[in-house]
Image (tube, rainbow, N blue to C red; front, top):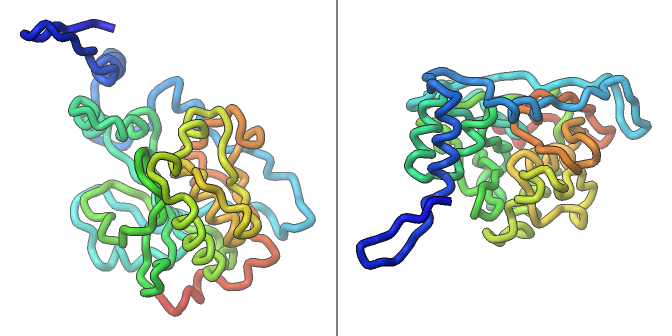
Length: 273
């Protein structure tokens, strides 16, 4: 790595991020529309295709999520926010121009936005404080798992919202998972699963009880775990979580099954519409 000398004779290393941006720029001409990621990273985003398998604890054929809302940036209208329900999955994206601009300024958290179609994903959940307001359950680098942001967080961002099949999400269970995980994964230094993001081994994404809820997740495995706990079992993870970079696109394009204990549907979500 190049060493730059300062006037006082001290040395400092040129940020690795500059080299990353420069390397991407060699194969990029930017762009102001949604993109499909960069090779070879975009090749990692395919979900499992074991759709023919059946399990005793599951019912029916596997179903995917439906896109119910989308936003290309700017302010979000009340009507568009009104389409969002508990259990919805919001996938965020940037154009190449936007992500490259952020990276050039040293915002390393935006790397996934350049390498993959979606750079971040969040799950819409009941406010763990009991207000009844919808919140976004999410985690990012150097952050604890949190449900601090309401739907106002969607303003000014580009995103697509996806909905699990009708009747597949138990809202009470979704709320229980949210309250548990924000308390358990509350250490900003430990809550983000860097090992899982790099594809070594993903943390528990199939919790059945409070004791199974983990202390560390990526944004993608957090969504898979929350939906699993609430009753919608996504077939989104390859090889038991080993050697698998679980991306937001992989999550929203996966198919899954409604578990037999998913009795409280999205339509009965605490009376909220």
